[in-house]
Length: 118
Length: 111
Image: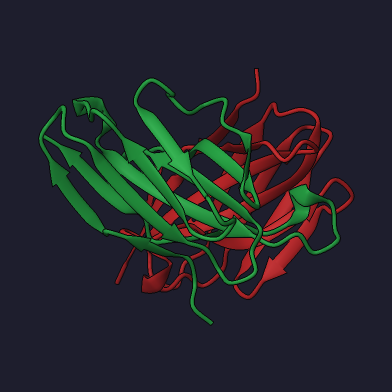
């Protein structure tokens, strides 16, 4: 079974340019997460989707970041315009609601997209 | 304030030796705690998950403990292997499914 797929794996752009990351979760997983991970730090949640609904986007910098999950399957995270401080790894994760309480559902992470803003 | 603190920040051990990583948290309300292993350039992979009522759980050479009273957890690695070199992240989850990540312990196993 394929895991969480992310692309691209690496992206280098100049500041003020736009950039987009794509995530395809594990088939059947209804919950999708986008995280930002700085070097030597733990991941920080940006947005969480339940199917196509964004249920927690409180940490998403909405002035420059946007995300969508139109059909409740794959998702795109966009930054426009990118700033130097956006250089980080962007992780996507997914989980399946299995009838247990949602906080017990295991998250499966993708390999991440490493963004470098010059 | 909800926080997860891990120690040590980094650790170097000889292959075959044991080690213990620590996690202290102030997250509330507590639901469950997980340890993840993150290899360089990869996403985190879950090792163990423990709920409030569990105080120990094993996954092969990895054994996690949880003391919900003192809000402490540890991850013990037995007979370390070179492939254990990675970052180990402690994550505390609340009942509202909010995840709080520690900054991780960077483990290096040398021959």
